[in-house]
Length: 228
Image (tube, rainbow, N blue to C red; front, side):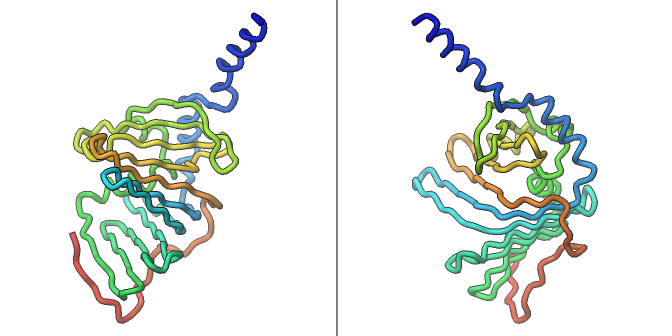
């Protein structure tokens, strides 16, 4: 009986080390890979949870993202797989557009000074260096989880910027041992709201061939609407 208890305690103590990777090791790998990052394509599943309504929505889409320069990030997120809420989100520099094919309308947002913040989130884990993450977040390693059949190390990131932290209390990233990008991200709003957004990626391709510069061509006869 004593041997059984000792064996169980040893197993529990060793489990986090079996698949987990130290934070320092993960950040070092990200530092090494960041300079060569040019872009990514992937399939994604987006889950939005609204706590006050206990409402969960799930959408499937595709991601194309391209980094031309540190200050020039472009992304196209295509959610046309679900006809009832079809849309394409296009981010190019300081311009954010959302195209709705059902109504043939595009909403345009002036990002302005918030472009750097959007860049940071578009690249969070994709092309991010460990040094940049440490500069902007308090980071801790939070064990390991299996995501899509792959073992990952889970990281928790708390924003250092007070204004950002008021809107985004925590970010979680799941990084596999054989890659430097996240298989999953979770963005939690303020703790008071309880809302979060979770994105799970599959078929991830780093630095694939894509047109340069990346852009989404808005179909002709689309009504334009300024928003925000």
